[in-house]
Every structure is written in C-alpha cells, then in structure tokens.
Length: 176
Image (cartoon, rainbow, N blue to C red; front, side, top):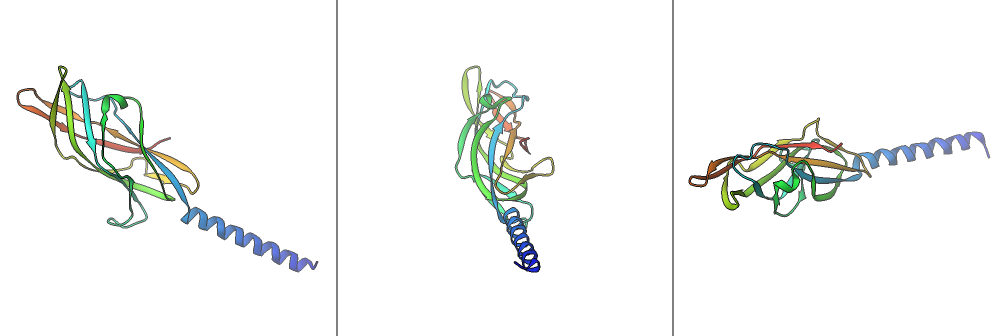
C-alpha cells in the first residue's frame, strides 16, 4: 500500500477518534449520588431532630440562572438527623450531563424535635434552601460517578411552653 495513503488513513483515524472522545467528554453523561449528613451542632434541648425535605435540584454551572436545573431527588422524605450524625446516607442518584455543577436547591418543609421523650412540631425558619456547592462546585466527568454531600446544620431554639423553631443552615460539597 502507498505510504501516503497509509499516513492519510492514520491521520483520519486519529481525528475521528479524537473528535469522538471530545464529544463524549463534553456531551457524555455521568452519575451524581446525593448524600445527607449532619455535623454535630447545637440542637438546644432536642435529643432528636426530624426534617422533611422536598425535591432536590442541582444546577449546571455552564447554564443560565434559570436554566440548567436538574431534579436529583424527585420526592420528599423524612430523615432523623441523629441517623446521619457524623455519617452519610444516600438519598438519591441520577445520570446527568457531564460538567461542573455549582448550586443546590431544596426545601425543608417540616420539622419535628424530640425533647424529654416527647415530639414537638417545629416552625422552620427560612426553609427554602439555595446553597453554593463548596470547593468550586462538583465536576462530573463522562462515564464516572461523583458524590455530593449535603450537610444540614440545624439550630433548635425554644421551649416546650413557647414551641420550637429550627433555623436550618446547609453546606454542600463534593465527596472526595
């Protein structure tokens, strides 16, 4: 075979492979797992804190402010924060476009605190959570799985006579 044809065939093959690989990296998909945890914080008089969270959304950084949101967890659920104290619990997983994700959004709809063995419904102050993902966001590469941890840091105030309020604070960061 003619060396020029062999070289041309080689160059075309490399270009096709490189283009395909670039398309895969840019437009490919990967999986993000979402986990909850609670770092030790001030629960006040409460021995247990239960929260009901709604659907969890994640934002792709390359998109506009209103676009680029993907629903990661499409249901609501209750979690006992004592179960995720210094531990993580996976609450969802989804295949999404590869890229960098920078924001998280969900709502804490209800809360119950246990004080002296009795449960009390609590008022949730500022339960609509919008938080930037720390460490520059979560970068997801095509064909890979990355984890995101939502660290819920509630502050419980109040009394059995006056009622209880929860002031939620949240940190989100990539799992390393």
